Amino acid sequence: MDEQERRLIDLERELTLLCRHFVASRGPRSGQTLERSAYVLLTRLEAGAPLTLKELAHTFQVNVSTINRQVSPMLKMGLVERIPDPDGGMARKYRPTTLGLERLRVDREISLEGAARLIRTTEWTDTTTQHFLTLLSQLNQSIERLEGLSLDRSPETSTPTDPAH
Image (cartoon, rainbow, N blue to C red; front, side, top):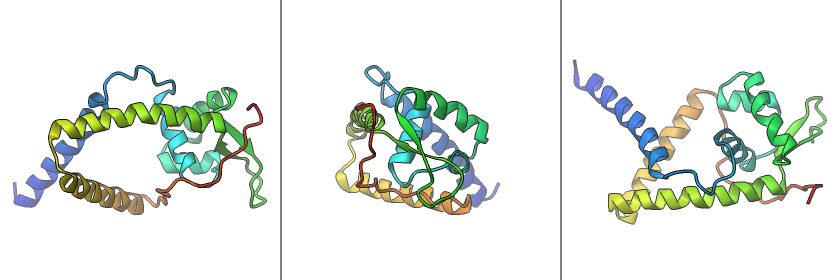
């Protein structure tokens, strides 16, 4: 095995461990009210323009039927709303409601507490944490380019309307 192959094996193992450790380090989801899939979908919808089921399926690289099964209960709970395509297309688009964004904010605060606990236990400096964040962001953006994804990383400033509230 050459050095490059060894690095790839090490990288794959460390990324696998990172995913497992990060989820576990945040602790139990007590206090969080969103299903994991709802949390992930709301995070994506918060970050950009409304999306169709097909666009969401492409973003998460799953079947449209899978996204539909995840979005349907969110729609019933008032976490997302279906709207006409602002650009005049035929497909309906989905965006988070005020309620969905509020529930996301509450769950995110709990998640951030876990992430802060993780960083504290590593005893990393702010510089080390920022360096890791920069490298991880570069890796994720490279993967997104490879997969043909375009993910906006800054939440929109506009707030959707929620007819129920």
